[in-house]
Length: 214
Image (cartoon, rainbow, N blue to C red; front, side, top):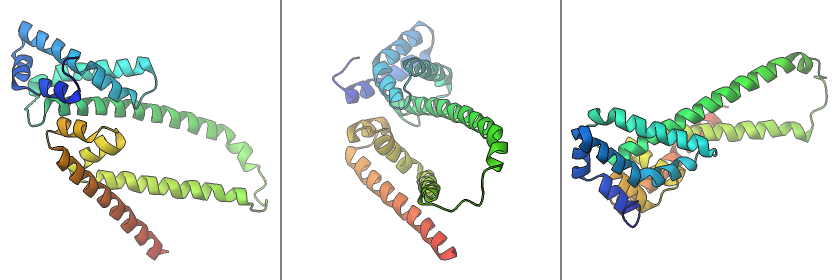
């Protein structure tokens, strides 16, 4: 990887020269794409590895990301930084993998629960309530708050949501997030602070409504 760090790498792939070469097609376009892969490979592989444990799956997702980049380049309008666009494609590929995994897990869970239904219905429903029975309530409450936080994140303005995801979800540094988004580190800090505050306020407001409705 050329350059001394992520900032150097992102500056190189966000250059007008590289984008022009990528869009030119032919041998020049192929060389530019190989250069793009060489510059970003380790950086985006590391990003994917934060979410997926399997090395093979990480390599597959990275390959899918580059295929999506190659396919989508003719329609890339340059409204965002090239690095931001590649990041968003990788993020979507990761989400697709996790969603597929959740669906498979849910199917297995439902099958297992269905097999146990008869046995569960035969349990003693008149057994006295114990302290252990309170645990599911705590789990449900925690799950409800997590759901609200997810909705609060989705309710953020697009740029604030991306700043929050890059910093607090993806654990990128302020400098890395700034380079990816094409804004200053100070702007990242300001937007992150506002995003966190908005999430807290949004969740507290929803919880207060629940409390008054009881």
